[in-house]
Length: 281
Image (cartoon, rainbow, N blue to C red; front, top):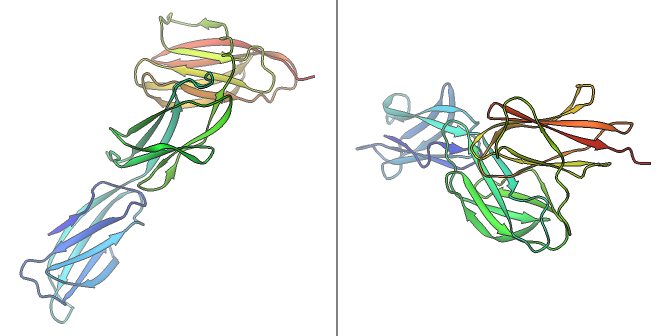
């Protein structure tokens, strides 16, 4: 019999495969093999032999354990299993960005894996490299923490403690006054109360901040276009979680003042907003 300590497992997570040989003789050879590659040659002890690895690639691995005779040349018995190793990703979002000083904001980390893997374990949130509160246990691949900060700008990250996987840095802005929401113009089928989108400041010079959310889980596409209809940049493309506010940032490469448009497509509907870029004098 061959058993895994965790299957599926995540990339870089240690996995222990245990071969049990009923009636086996201690000291005889046991080999763990994948295809034509011998992963480990060891000996039976207490009727068991183990293979530990944290370097299996993200894939499905057919691993076989073979128990040999006294001469170590003939296979007496063998067993195999499919060890699925998932490639993980971690995403971090803020419930409100920017936010007012000393006002609560929720940071949510989503750890996702391939091959049907549902991550477990804990996530640690950090502000400018310093830990925020205690590690948070994942529930259905998500972990959230509530925090509040003084006036300023903070670099927020989330670390999946099982593997050390770290999210991209989220810049949380704490401002004395929330900016004015940009004018929104709708295209196509009218959108009722969602999806929600805010763009600020308007006009802008150095960068444009965009917040958006959906009431339900869906796919989102956020793009920036010039007044001539030329696409300037794709700011976001991928899945979004319902009820979570996402934050994107556009840094213009324009050389003169002009109007630009953002297009947000979710749930088969597109919203278009116009903002003014003012060249810095």
